[in-house]
Length: 114
Image 1 (cartoon, rainbow, N blue to C red):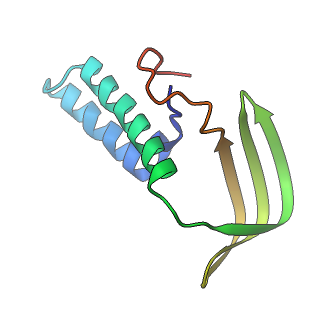
Image 2 (spheres, rainbow, N blue to C red):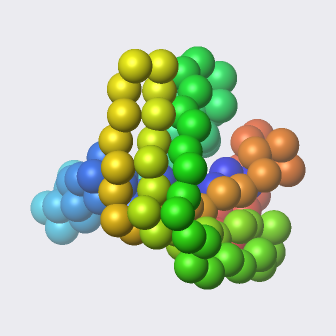
């Protein structure tokens, strides 16, 4: 099973809209669209864990809320500073969703939804 967090990104939303349009015009089946989404989940999770080498550090002025449910941490932070080598950014609010990538089985095709 792969996490489906990245379906809510610009890339994931665009993929879903395109697949919906292809289904609407009868060019692909809903089953094929689901297979494409499952492969997207696997590929994005794999690419982010294996290909991305840069590190970003952050410091928050305040931890507003936190939650741990189903092995997923959700953190709401305020007044956050991000740093990467010589880059710097400051934002008012940030939501971080963190999942344990080592527990997700990226080769299991039997489960598509969590």
